[in-house]
Image (tube, rainbow, N blue to C red; front, side, top):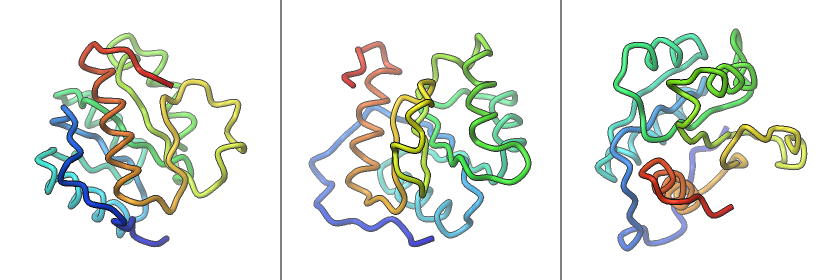
Length: 143
């Protein structure tokens, strides 16, 4: 898996996110996303598995957004997403799904709020965060 690349100037892009849960089993990609978030003054919560993600959510505080890899060992991202949407405390947290498969492959995944096809650039990641954090903060999500 390649690291996300930054193809644009992100200095003029802002979002109200303060805390993002990143669920990704690829260590390099997890580190890249966490580094980017830290540079954007966003605190990353790292989870390498679905179990770690559930533990982080139970421990709190709740994130503004969840970035969720679908292809993970153990508890797959699809199962984790279902659990998120069934739990009253978690269902309102926006989720951006990250996958190496084309978006069309997941057209039956209506529980996700956004889709990031890997590899994605940091400009696309920032745009998704901006959209989803506005939703989390009470503004409507423009799909």
